Image (cartoon, rainbow over all chains, first blue to last red; front, side, top):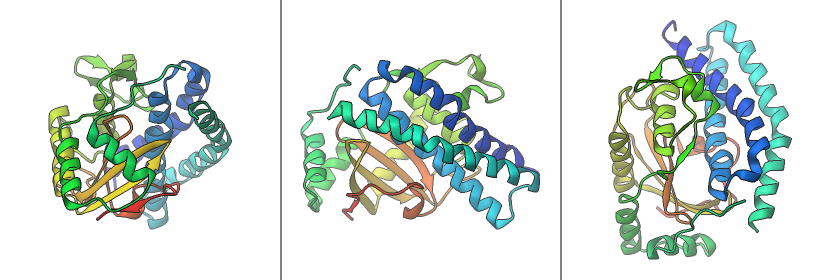
Length: 99
Length: 175
């Protein structure tokens, strides 16, 4: 369990950054990005973030996550949930402009 | 918005056509696709380094992560897989990472076609052959026939965990 902590902290930090700072950057620079780079964020980066959140949730449910990180997982879940309308807006823009 | 170059390679057009009108690829067609995909890489253009990488402790080569702003996409993915996901061993090089993905493409018994973020994809699912600290039993490689680049390659436990937030509406099992 001791060796697992840096790994889980890394996953948490990644999801926080990709749905936090990274999303804000993408929103601010969306007009400068080409279709490929937009799809990199929507279709690759966020898929990675969701996989990492899934791994954290499974570890929390299985009781293998250090107890003091469970609360942070719940905060990250809320961050991801609250970010969905912003992600949907970017996806909508992406789809409309590519059409 | 600028437009990235779409692929008109015959094999990529085959992938685009099979995604647009789903049908099972013949063995010969699939072999042609596999042979093509293992000649492709991730897009080599420099891309913005994602915020999670810049928060990592340590450095990439001689450059601290905090100071990295642009890297080729392949290197960004390599950092994600080795240091964050820890699915590939630390110290894996980009050619080694790609070689592992190519092995998965060649060996894949699970092959899927689908649309993802407006692109025509073919995905390959094979037993993992490269063991990292957090390896999963299967390796997933997603290739965009729209652009002619491998878009991602990671390890996963089952087909069900390839996508966590819903599967593409036209997800089609080829093999």
